[in-house]
Image 1 (cartoon, rainbow, N blue to C red):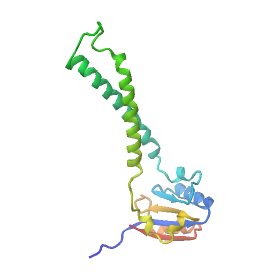
Image 2: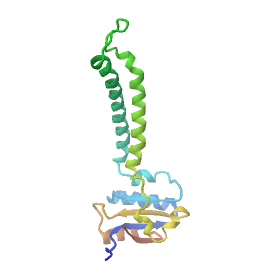
Image 3: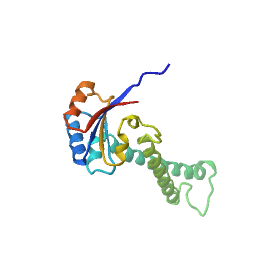
Image 4: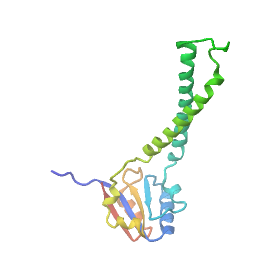
Length: 181
Protein backbone atom coordinates (compact mmCIF):
# COMPACT_ATOMS: atom_id res chain seq x y z
CA UNK A 1 0.00 0.00 0.00
CA UNK A 2 1.47 3.33 -1.05
CA UNK A 3 1.98 6.10 1.49
CA UNK A 4 0.09 9.34 0.91
CA UNK A 5 2.30 12.15 -0.38
CA UNK A 6 3.83 14.43 2.22
CA UNK A 7 3.87 18.17 1.65
CA UNK A 8 7.40 19.56 1.14
CA UNK A 9 6.32 23.20 0.82
CA UNK A 10 4.63 25.83 -1.28
CA UNK A 11 6.19 27.25 -4.43
CA UNK A 12 5.45 30.55 -6.16
CA UNK A 13 6.36 31.17 -9.81
CA UNK A 14 7.49 34.61 -11.02
CA UNK A 15 8.29 36.05 -14.46
CA UNK A 16 11.19 38.41 -13.65
CA UNK A 17 14.21 38.38 -11.34
CA UNK A 18 13.04 41.62 -9.72
CA UNK A 19 9.78 39.95 -8.71
CA UNK A 20 11.51 36.98 -7.08
CA UNK A 21 13.97 39.26 -5.24
CA UNK A 22 11.08 41.35 -3.90
CA UNK A 23 9.19 38.17 -2.94
CA UNK A 24 12.22 36.76 -1.12
CA UNK A 25 12.76 40.08 0.67
CA UNK A 26 9.14 40.22 1.78
CA UNK A 27 9.24 36.56 2.89
CA UNK A 28 12.41 37.25 4.89
CA UNK A 29 10.77 40.33 6.47
CA UNK A 30 7.66 38.28 7.23
CA UNK A 31 9.83 35.84 9.23
CA UNK A 32 10.24 32.86 6.89
CA UNK A 33 13.70 31.30 7.09
CA UNK A 34 13.46 27.88 5.41
CA UNK A 35 13.06 28.86 1.78
CA UNK A 36 14.91 28.52 -1.46
CA UNK A 37 14.86 30.24 -4.84
CA UNK A 38 15.39 28.75 -8.28
CA UNK A 39 16.27 30.67 -11.44
CA UNK A 40 17.73 30.05 -14.91
CA UNK A 41 20.73 32.28 -14.13
CA UNK A 42 22.42 33.83 -11.11
CA UNK A 43 20.42 36.69 -9.64
CA UNK A 44 22.50 39.18 -7.68
CA UNK A 45 21.35 39.55 -4.09
CA UNK A 46 19.04 36.53 -4.08
CA UNK A 47 21.32 34.05 -2.27
CA UNK A 48 21.73 36.45 0.66
CA UNK A 49 17.97 36.67 1.06
CA UNK A 50 17.21 32.94 1.04
CA UNK A 51 20.37 31.47 2.60
CA UNK A 52 20.37 30.88 6.35
CA UNK A 53 23.03 32.93 8.11
CA UNK A 54 24.59 29.76 9.60
CA UNK A 55 25.92 28.73 6.16
CA UNK A 56 28.08 31.85 6.05
CA UNK A 57 30.15 30.80 9.07
CA UNK A 58 30.43 27.02 8.97
CA UNK A 59 32.81 26.34 6.07
CA UNK A 60 35.60 28.80 7.02
CA UNK A 61 35.50 27.50 10.59
CA UNK A 62 35.68 23.92 9.36
CA UNK A 63 38.65 24.75 7.09
CA UNK A 64 40.46 26.47 9.97
CA UNK A 65 39.94 23.41 12.19
CA UNK A 66 41.13 21.13 9.37
CA UNK A 67 44.27 23.25 8.90
CA UNK A 68 45.04 23.24 12.61
CA UNK A 69 44.54 19.47 12.68
CA UNK A 70 47.00 19.15 9.79
CA UNK A 71 49.57 21.32 11.59
CA UNK A 72 49.29 19.27 14.78
CA UNK A 73 49.39 16.01 12.80
CA UNK A 74 52.62 17.13 11.10
CA UNK A 75 54.14 18.10 14.44
CA UNK A 76 53.23 14.77 16.04
CA UNK A 77 54.42 12.76 13.01
CA UNK A 78 57.81 14.48 13.19
CA UNK A 79 58.23 14.87 16.95
CA UNK A 80 57.28 11.37 18.08
CA UNK A 81 59.91 9.45 16.09
CA UNK A 82 62.63 12.06 16.67
CA UNK A 83 62.04 12.62 20.38
CA UNK A 84 60.42 9.45 21.78
CA UNK A 85 60.46 6.59 19.30
CA UNK A 86 64.04 6.62 17.96
CA UNK A 87 66.08 9.59 19.22
CA UNK A 88 69.44 10.06 17.49
CA UNK A 89 72.22 12.58 18.06
CA UNK A 90 72.88 14.03 14.60
CA UNK A 91 75.43 16.80 14.46
CA UNK A 92 74.81 17.83 18.05
CA UNK A 93 71.29 19.11 17.28
CA UNK A 94 68.60 18.69 19.94
CA UNK A 95 66.06 15.93 19.38
CA UNK A 96 63.16 18.39 19.26
CA UNK A 97 64.52 20.68 16.56
CA UNK A 98 61.19 22.18 15.55
CA UNK A 99 62.41 24.39 12.67
CA UNK A 100 63.13 21.26 10.66
CA UNK A 101 59.47 20.20 11.15
CA UNK A 102 58.04 23.32 9.45
CA UNK A 103 57.93 22.03 5.83
CA UNK A 104 55.97 18.89 6.77
CA UNK A 105 53.67 20.84 9.08
CA UNK A 106 53.01 23.38 6.28
CA UNK A 107 52.27 20.69 3.70
CA UNK A 108 49.87 18.82 5.99
CA UNK A 109 48.15 22.10 6.91
CA UNK A 110 47.46 22.79 3.22
CA UNK A 111 46.41 19.18 2.55
CA UNK A 112 44.00 18.95 5.49
CA UNK A 113 42.56 22.43 4.77
CA UNK A 114 41.92 21.58 1.11
CA UNK A 115 40.32 18.22 1.90
CA UNK A 116 38.18 19.81 4.61
CA UNK A 117 37.06 22.53 2.17
CA UNK A 118 36.09 20.04 -0.52
CA UNK A 119 34.29 17.52 1.68
CA UNK A 120 32.79 20.26 3.89
CA UNK A 121 31.32 21.98 0.84
CA UNK A 122 29.88 18.70 -0.41
CA UNK A 123 28.40 17.98 3.03
CA UNK A 124 26.97 21.48 3.59
CA UNK A 125 25.38 21.50 0.13
CA UNK A 126 23.72 18.13 0.85
CA UNK A 127 25.41 16.57 -2.15
CA UNK A 128 25.06 14.25 -3.92
CA UNK A 129 21.34 14.86 -4.24
CA UNK A 130 20.01 13.09 -7.34
CA UNK A 131 16.42 13.78 -6.26
CA UNK A 132 14.77 16.87 -4.82
CA UNK A 133 11.04 17.28 -4.13
CA UNK A 134 10.80 20.50 -6.19
CA UNK A 135 11.22 18.38 -9.32
CA UNK A 136 7.67 17.13 -8.62
CA UNK A 137 6.21 20.63 -8.99
CA UNK A 138 4.34 21.25 -12.21
CA UNK A 139 6.05 23.75 -14.53
CA UNK A 140 9.32 23.55 -12.55
CA UNK A 141 11.11 22.64 -15.77
CA UNK A 142 10.73 26.34 -16.67
CA UNK A 143 13.27 27.17 -13.91
CA UNK A 144 16.01 26.28 -16.36
CA UNK A 145 14.54 28.49 -19.12
CA UNK A 146 12.71 31.67 -18.22
CA UNK A 147 10.89 31.47 -14.87
CA UNK A 148 11.86 32.20 -11.27
CA UNK A 149 10.58 30.20 -8.30
CA UNK A 150 10.46 30.78 -4.54
CA UNK A 151 9.71 27.77 -2.35
CA UNK A 152 8.88 28.04 1.35
CA UNK A 153 9.41 24.71 3.09
CA UNK A 154 6.92 23.05 5.41
CA UNK A 155 9.65 22.69 8.05
CA UNK A 156 9.82 26.47 8.51
CA UNK A 157 8.72 27.36 12.06
CA UNK A 158 6.36 30.04 10.73
CA UNK A 159 4.82 27.77 8.06
CA UNK A 160 1.06 27.47 8.24
CA UNK A 161 -0.47 26.12 5.03
CA UNK A 162 -3.33 28.61 4.68
CA UNK A 163 -1.43 31.70 5.87
CA UNK A 164 1.65 30.88 3.81
CA UNK A 165 -0.44 30.25 0.71
CA UNK A 166 -2.27 33.55 1.20
CA UNK A 167 1.04 35.32 1.72
CA UNK A 168 2.48 33.87 -1.51
CA UNK A 169 -0.68 34.73 -3.46
CA UNK A 170 -0.34 38.29 -2.13
CA UNK A 171 3.06 38.54 -3.85
CA UNK A 172 1.29 38.43 -7.27
CA UNK A 173 2.99 35.34 -8.69
CA UNK A 174 2.04 33.61 -11.92
CA UNK A 175 1.07 30.53 -9.92
CA UNK A 176 1.33 29.02 -6.42
CA UNK A 177 1.61 25.24 -6.20
CA UNK A 178 2.01 22.59 -3.54
CA UNK A 179 5.26 20.64 -3.66
CA UNK A 180 4.99 17.03 -2.52
CA UNK A 181 7.97 15.00 -1.42
